Length: 421
Ligand SMILES: Cc1cc2nc3c(=O)[nH]c(=O)nc-3n(C[C@H](O)[C@H](O)[C@H](O)COP(=O)(O)OP(=O)(O)OC[C@H]3O[C@@H](n4cnc5c(N)ncnc54)[C@H](O)[C@@H]3O)c2cc1C
Image (cartoon, protein in one colour):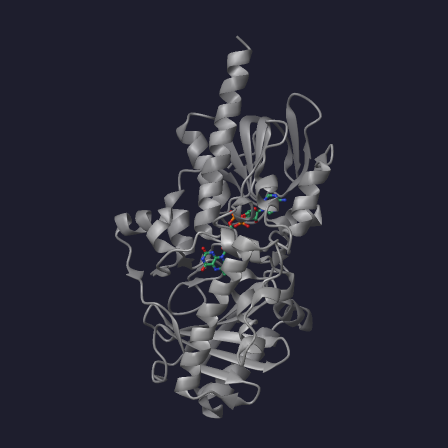
């Protein structure tokens, strides 16, 4: 679309939060445009249909807490095929040995207890690290590597209270065709200026000036939906600078890393099906989870997370894939590689417009999400997964945060209009 000179409201970022905010504003009759740095909508929830024989979500794919997830209701209503089968471990390899099936069950039971213990501690105690409140036992030194798989930050740097605050409910559903494709389809009427990175937000005057690579535009309000990784990297300059409490909140809610390695098998490999998982722990913090049979096809996904995922990105392209293939060989034997047709790995840290996968709260910092969400000067509003105390790190959290920021912006405009009479 053509770059305008002015508009009532500007939304920065066409991820889930930005799209949902812009849609709500336009439904309220408020002239709004979205400025998006990249050439596509969806941000961290994006489907690529070109990589494998089935569409692949590079970022968010599950509708978590489906029983209370507003997007899950919409997907069901739209009649998309959903895959609701829960995922359980069938294989666990720890430091050179594959566990027996009884041991795998014990490991799985330990994991459930671990999350329960973290959540209980988060409710009762001062805000400590998830690692410090894990029950110690035979499986703890491996199971702590499951924490970054969920939170994107390692056990020693993530807050137990943040885990307690998360609204966990039944159901993790996959959308056939991709969650990214579904979110995009909900927002086709939202006007987006693509390839238009915002460089500066100057809110010194009554009209806010937004500087972009494509020019400058004036607006009354801004909704920022960029990740805390982007806010922390300061590629968008705020003038005057964001207040100290805001920058402090950004610093204690950094973007951790979760990377995916898509692995497509030839259909004749039939050792694992949808819902089955393998964990592979080779040494210290080196760990991956492998999930099989996405959408009942031969597509598997390996996950690497936390500092290990960052280290693999630094090592270079292919390092995460090599590690996941090492895990497959240890679990199924060397012959498994003959059945791999192709692979694709993500590198969310290297993406300057996300600078990581999603936010985690450092110990002592669970309350920072509420501070990050607070409007500034009743003209600058903040949305995005990191601003959601009970639904951070999710697509539905981003969606709800966009709606919340839109409501705040609409309210501020109507107050302003009432005062000008
Ligand atoms: C590997 C991975 C797996 C995940 N799995 C799940 C899952 O299964 N289920 C789930 O619910 N969630 C999952 N998530 C998390 C989920 O994808 C995110 O929480 C959600 O998509 C974040 O949306 P957002 O709108 O807050 O941010 P974003 O999607 O990051 O949107 C922000 C947008 O701002 C743009 N932008 C950045 N800088 C600028 C700038 N200067 N100017 C203009 N635009 C800019 C970005 O390009 C982006 O499009 C996963 C994430 C990853 C990375």
